Length: 430
Ligand code: CMC
Image (cartoon, rainbow, N blue to C red; front, side, top):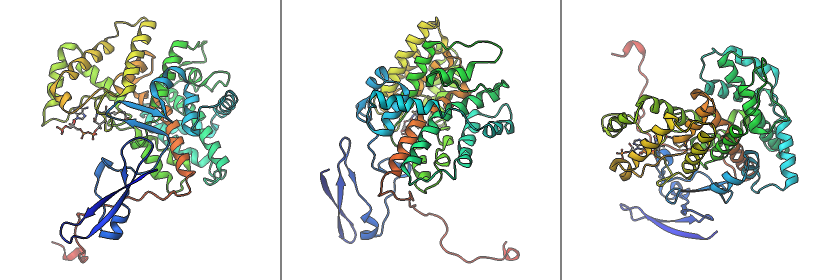
C-alpha cells in the first residue's frame, strides 16, 4: 500500500501536523486521523459516518458513482447470474470461490446444521400471533447465545467456523418458525435433502395436510434475491455487528437482526409495498410525488436513494429484470404493483427533484414485488433480507475476529450538555 501525506494547520496557533493517507486496492484514500487527538487535542466530527472509514476490509467494494458492486472482487452481475447463495456465502466468508470439493463440504455442513433445539422452538409460544416477525427472529437469534455459550471461544478459529455454519444453516429455520407462528400453522422441520432455497420455501409454505412441491422458478428467484442482499460492506446493520462483536461478545448476540429493521435500511422493502398500495393507481403518482417534494412534509419515495450509490444501484437493475421474467413465468404479466412501480420509477427519474439529488431506485424498490409474487407476506420481507445478510454479517464478524489488530469500537462525541454543576437537594429545587 502506498501512502500520501496531508498537512493540517491550526489556523489560530499555526501548529502543523502531518496526516498519512492510506490507499486501498480500490476507492478513495483514507486519512488516518488517530494522531489528531495526540497532536492537537481534538476529535473529528462526522455524524452518520458520511466521510469516515471505520475499518479495513477485503470483502465487498462499492463504487457509488459508477454503480459498481464487487463481492471479493467479482462483479455482482456475474455472481447473480452464475453463482448460488451458498457459493456466494462461501466466497464472502472465505475470500475465494470454492473448489467443487470445498463447495460440497460447505453445502453438506450447512444442510446438517439446519435443525434448531426444540427448546428454542418453544420460545415462539411466548409471542402473540401478531408480533412482527422481525421482532421474533431478532429475539430468537440473540437467544441462540444461550445455547452455544460454553462451546464458543471467539479466539478459536474452529469455533468461529462452527458458528458461521450454524447461523447460516439455522436462520431460515428460525425465520420459518416465526412465520408459521404468525399463521398459527404447525412448524415444518427442515429437509436436508433439499438445497438452501428449496428448503426455505418448503419450511415456509408446506403444511402437514398436503404435499408441497417446490416451484423451481420460485427457488431460482429466491436464490437471486439472497445473493443480491448477501453483503453491502459497512452498512448500518453490518457496522452494528462489528461494533457489538468488537467487545468480544458471543457472536449470536452480535448478530443484531433488529439493526436491519428500520425503513431507512432493510425495512424499506416492506415500506415500498405499503407505499405502492397507498398510491393505488398511476393517476395518483404525481400527487404522491408532490407530497415527497414538499419541504414541510416527511414523506419519502421508499426504495429510492442510497448513502453510497449516486447512480443506479446495480442490484435494482438485476431485480427489475428478474421481476419481468418471474411475473411472465408465473403468468402475472399484468401484476398491478409491478406496473405501478415501473411507472413511478419512470416518472421520478425524469423529475428535477430526484435528478438534482441523484436519487435512483435501490435494491428494495422491486424486491418486495418479487416476494409478494412468491406468496411471501409483506411483514416477512425484511426477514428474507436478514437471512441473506447473515452471510455478510458472518463474513465481517470473522474478518474482524481474525484480525490481530482488532480494537473495541468506541466512538468519541461532541458534548453539548451542561457544564459541571452541584447537586441540589430535592426540597431546595424550585
Ligand atoms: N425520497 C425523497 N427524498 C429523498 C429520498 C427519498 N427516498 N432519499 C433522499 N432524499 C433527499 C433528502 O430529503 C435530502 O434532500 P435535501 O438535500 O433537500 O434535504 C437529500 O435527498 C439527501 O438525503 P439524505 O437523507 O441526506 O441521504 P442519506 O444518504 O442520509 O440517506 C437513505 C440515504 C437510503 C436513508 C435515503 O435515501 C432514504 O431514506 N431512502 C428511502 C429509504 C430506502 O429506500 N432505504 C433503503 C436503502 S437500500 C437498502 C439498504 O440499505 O438496506
